[in-house]
Length: 420
Image (tube, rainbow, N blue to C red):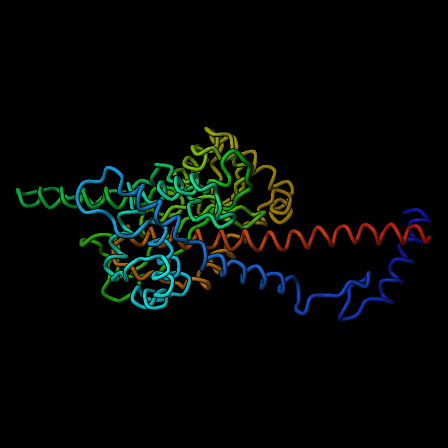
């Protein structure tokens, strides 16, 4: 460091010490009333809740009913998809029952000229509109397009079905009679239905864009001690499902996800999530994951698609000469040391996905109240949608404030250097 640089540094430090206190920063800018950007978070969340309560309107409802009932034989739908989704969003956001939500939303439903639905009507339409093969999302996007996109930032149709599902099948047993054959066929049919509900969903915001992501899985409890998850033959008594999430470490938004029963394990779900995400046009720049994903099958996938994969390498996994990418990564880690390598490779950012699981469980609870697996998958999709929209509002407020802070910091530094 030159003598001029030392003098400038001392002057800046002296000015900073003179002006720094608990109310202002080193440039005299007043801090928020709480640490960090909590005041901005509050404003963003308030605006999010206001938009959530107002994003359904009569014009959308009329148009959606026309679209959903077009060429429909039999009795027409009485409720548009956006209203059913709105009620289920309110249910997940407030962690209430369907009956309580209908009571709270009585004024809103009256303003939309809709009759009061029973909880069974909401459940049935939720499955029809947003279950596997449902047309609810398509109708909502079509209505939004025809009305000129007036809903703005509040986009409840962000997750698109990739059509790729993790491997899942019913346990097989050797049949000894015709009854066993019929029973196995029924189990296989139910397993196929569950597998369709496990399809990877991708955030359309990232289509055609790059993303540095962290991948992990976490359990979600099911409500009630008598509820089973997989099928009647399921032997586990822990009563939970798994959420597998690909999270953008820069924005902390969900890029893609898959909801599965207790099986398959985390490592076996990774190929489906990666392939589903790439299929929808998302460019994965980098992928971080913990040691559970350090498997031969996953490294063969990485070599096939040429992805920058940075897992926590297992120490016992030494025989990797056939896996060229992993072997090279291990040699680099041994040369640099694990801690330094994790910092350079970006693996240290993987903690954000752990933080995400904590946040979403605090926001929407650690359990789902549905009984059927396909309904649980729909509920989790709604939770991720709410989280992503909420995160978008927060980023918009905080980014604007950060840009202002950066500009002020540059101006103040120029003034300090000018005084020298």
